[in-house]
Image 1 (cartoon, rainbow, N blue to C red):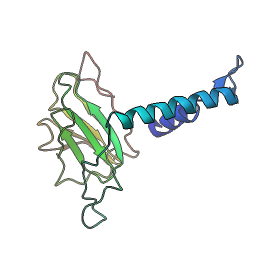
Image 2: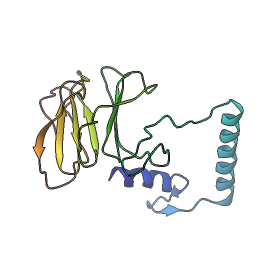
Image 3: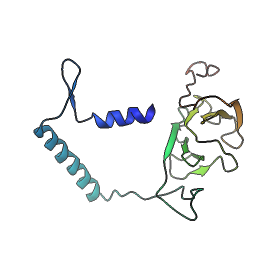
Length: 173
């Protein structure tokens, strides 16, 4: 549902709603204003020297050598107690971690095969405790990703959402 919600927000962002709640297409003036604003932002970013560069991960298991064409991120979470720490789960079954706000990343699942990390949730006060929802399991680490254990194996559905209660971290939905 997360991907659908992102698509829906993108797809209807240029449309207005009628008083009855129906979507109406934008008029030509609104579309032109949006295009001018978008083009202005693109040009200003190019003038400021903002460029994007692929930093990795580059090794895709199905491909030999370095590639940058496949880097889908399925899950991401940032630590509430330590904002420099983020975890991401990728399409290639790896979970990567950064401790410097994304300047550098390292894999915390080199020896694990999770079946597609779908959701990541970091404990609200301890960034070493992380829950990972996969296509068939809920995994947990208590040491920042060095080791992982199964909390609920052979779950019948993809785990696409994990929520830790903000004031009582013993409650996990």
